[in-house]
Image (cartoon, rainbow, N blue to C red):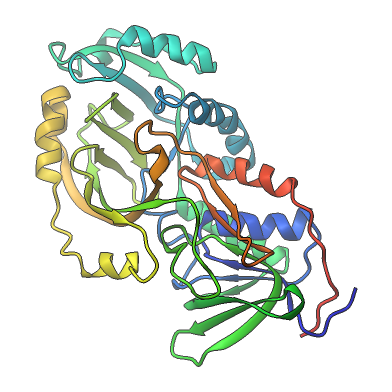
Amino acid sequence: MTSTDINHDAIIIGGGFYGAAIAIYLAKQRGFKRVVLIEREAGLLRRASYNNQARVHNGYHYPRSFTTAYRSRVNLPKFVRDWPAAVTQDFTKLYAIARRNSKVTAKQFVRFCKEIGAKIEPVEPALRALFEPRLIEDVFLVEEYAFDSKKLASWAVKELQDCGVQIRLQTRVTAISSGPNQILQVALKPEGGSEELLTSRYVFNCTYSGLNQFKGDFAGTQTGLKQEITEMALMQLPPALQDLGLTVMDGPFFSMMPFQARGLHTLSHVRYTPHMHWKDEQGIDPYQKLNQYDRATRVDRMVRDVGRYLPAVLDAKYVDSLFEIKTVLVKNEGDDGRPILFEKHTELPGCYSVLGGKIDNIYDVLEKLDGESFVLVETTV
């Protein structure tokens, strides 16, 4: 098939981990020859792919969502296999169950881990002694890892270049429209430049918090989304906690994980990490709201509460905070599930919107793409 009207096989909007991985998949696995990746920042993996807890989940976090937990448990070894240089394993990971206000007991947590096939062991007395026994029912040694987003970004740049994917940085897509003969038209504006129009048979919207911020014929996602401004505190931990990752659950509690990109630990708290939220709608630019937010840290309240359960954290030094937009599916707010969003837009055949709540969800996305039939055309510039 030949067309003089299409100049790309696929246009990927969003240069985070998902956008980069999908572009590489299309080029390497599906034979797409002319793929362009468009990112509004000055580099890849600069937003949500960087500003998060950098956790490679193994299912422990989701005792109220068996599907999410099991998929994480299955995907973790794949992620370690595919991105070994970016995975941090040289720390001890503990999960503790609170005596009060937890939505699972220690006994229920052990049974849940066995159901999903996740490794869990009793913890040695020296590590148990870090926790306040009046507030913590039990502590377990588990198998969970962290990732270095800077190393993932380096991988993405190299792979994209090797695959011949064109990377357009500091460029914002403004509209997606339907053209003749099922051709999709993508309007974009480089920083400091004039508007351009690209055409393709396929468009993949991987913009995370910006999924619904396009004009033209793009009607938005059918799945309801909620936006949150979140704060991830970066901490220098005292020696007693330096080589640990810790999570107290399951309810209004907290988690600390190594953040290798900065050589620090992240501290998140279910009560204090979310600063504000709203229903996602076209015309309400999440990034503009974030830029206008005062970003007053809540780290004092985080540390004060965490210190009740883990006294050693009171000796930690606060360094910085990562403020970002977090996007969640409204339907999963109650059960903490983190399924992917994978929507095909009926008003724009060939246009897909993709969102994952966790980095290991990428395998669920790739499985969906494996089931799609793509028709390639001979493209012209």
